[in-house]
Length: 405
Image (cartoon, rainbow, N blue to C red):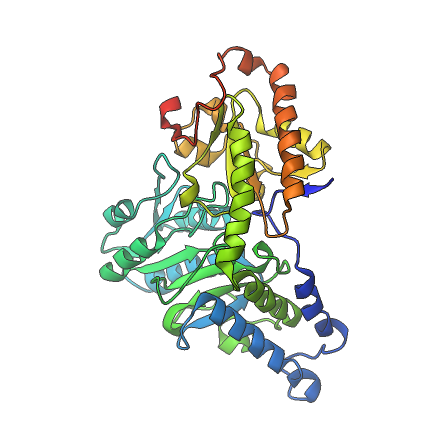
């Protein structure tokens, strides 16, 4: 059996999405900017896709949703254009973000620091989230932007975006959220929550790769990242990726229709897998389940290196990851684990298991069986595990890792 448990890295494209995209490669292939019928033939499908995205996010008519190549582009766009608009051409000089953002945010912030911008990286608490009052404490009159992820790619922890949004609104500071791990997985209602900018990516909710979007509240000004033709109302130049946009709209509609039922089904399978893992002695899962996206487990197994575990799972045809695939080239201790206070040894052992609506009960059964055997195999050859006395199974529940300093 092949079991894909790395859905926070990417997802399978839903066959219904592929079907919706197919006409836009060789049949309706015109450039939507062309005035002839080959070009205009794609307009109804583009309108439909845009409506699907607006509906799924409950965006208001006066808001703007601009398709991009991915969320990395959307994140770069917000950070760099806020820098141009409010720091280079304004009186601000400060950005607030978190230590656990995706590299698309952190690397851009590092670049902005090299340009002289002051950046505050907020730590997470022992549960792996940044609390709203922490954000509030670091906003000054020089703060141009607060950027906080909606949900963590590593832990699945859901951040208090509604409260942070209210704080930013009250203080008159722009608020951006990288919602790549939230959109299509949990309800995201942009009339309930105040955000100025929100990034998303289709391939995280069973759409195609290479297409994402940026939501812009009240269609407010934001200098384009890409200058060129006047596509997307001049906001984002480049010929529209028609098939991608169509696929993204369809995928988001499928993901958000009856989302509570989908979430419950995924959560039940996730909890069953997690319960089985926590029955093994000396295993720790980061964060309380009810504060996480329903599909994610970040587990650390004392005495077992994450890379060794991945190799063993991979040999059993199970795809998982250590922390985030976006940074897994660097074999460093997992930053999230360190942030929530795990000791260095535990921080090296994080394995992320992430499910999707295509994950089956049979796959979970298989994964539980293989995972259990793998822990036994790897602990038998572990030098670090021999040194600790295992605690009896079942005692250690979802932990707050700070007591393992």
